[in-house]
Length: 614
Image 1 (cartoon, rainbow, N blue to C red):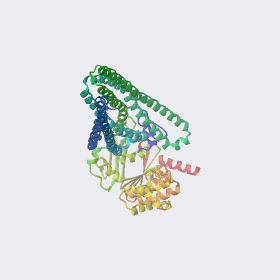
Image 2: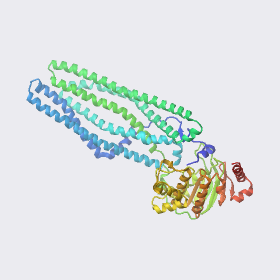
Image 3: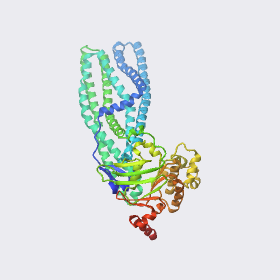
Image 4: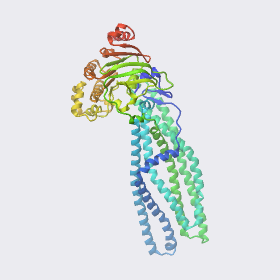
């Protein structure tokens, strides 16, 4: 990942982004939602993998719906054949039948919900797996320009929205559709004219739903975007608390949070208002339908065109008819929110991965001879100025190459190009005389070990964090690596030694201890190329001496690139490249550069004066 200071001074941040106390936050225009039909197709692609579950849900729902719809029909029969004629024996038998029907409907409804829970969770598991898999394949530049909190929002909030909708809405949707079809069939069998009267409300329902949907779709999509922005800001400020406090920007952070919180409140309020309109509107339509059937059905019963039982059954069916319409309308609102969330998830899945052709390229063998940069030029984007211009140097196997220069000169960019976190614009980078683009990218990185200024550790044991360098390493291998890194002594003093649990990012260790563990990790990986990017800049002098002793052993037989502000750490380098304004300004070993009395000489003199002042 590029050094943030280099990006600022040498090339500037990507267009459309500004820097907060932590990572980049997007400030560009709101991205329009993708095609709803296409998003639904992609969701169905995941759902279709659960065919047996969906079939079971459909069967159980159908049985439950048929049993539920049989109830009003039996009630109508009970009025006409048993209640009015006062046939109590037949009425008792019919009541027992009704009890069986409604209990059976409830049982199959529960079975449907049970199976649907498994279907929805399996579906979301597949989506979540693919999303996380995609994140592992995205290039470093994507993470540079995307707020980490925004990505977290898509993997958690948006995924939860899709999960909840599938779990709650899918079964209800199937039930509503089957109930509507069943109600129409039962009503047509009983009386065609009353059925036609019941159908009058359908155009009104379509009109209301269509017009409300124009707004709910828009506001639910914006709600998800604002939620992602707010989560990104919170993640950024939590990560950057030290910076915020040292510059006393608490009030500024609170003001930005207030603005984002208000923006989320406003768009969420609009979404909920328009979503809330759907329910009352449908209730009005339902009551209108009920009144029409009651009035016209009563007139038909008085004129003995239909029986009282049929009118009562139709009144029940009118409620049964309106209920799935209401549910479909309400599920439509939830569906809008789910589609908005799914679109954001699929946007990440559609990002361009690191070159997939690499998978078909041969693996890079062990590095035998040299690493060469030949007229390498690079810029972070087409709009930026070049960060590096015509960089050329040759490093033999086993050489220690030091990169020095002012912040933003391009030192970290050079090693980022060697690891192919970014690809060069012009020139070539060769290993043993062959361009690195010829080899599989992962096999290249397997040959490289990196120790960064910010020592990153994972939650887990010390043993696991060191073993991250080589997963098949034995416990003995891990201990030997720690000994080489001069980390064994302090590790054994921890409460549980190598099995001591580390908090997030190793917060329960000192900066020096964290750095020693990351160096042990690099030693265990046994790389051909070693990159130390400001590895000792945050460490006290005593710990630095420990690291340097370990590095002397580690660097034997390996090509090493050392980036350091402390010039004392690079005096013994075989070759020192002085980088200034994206070019190699001077080169040579320490003695040669001091004799030239150029830029490197001035850096050394300034560093010496600073030490005397201290």
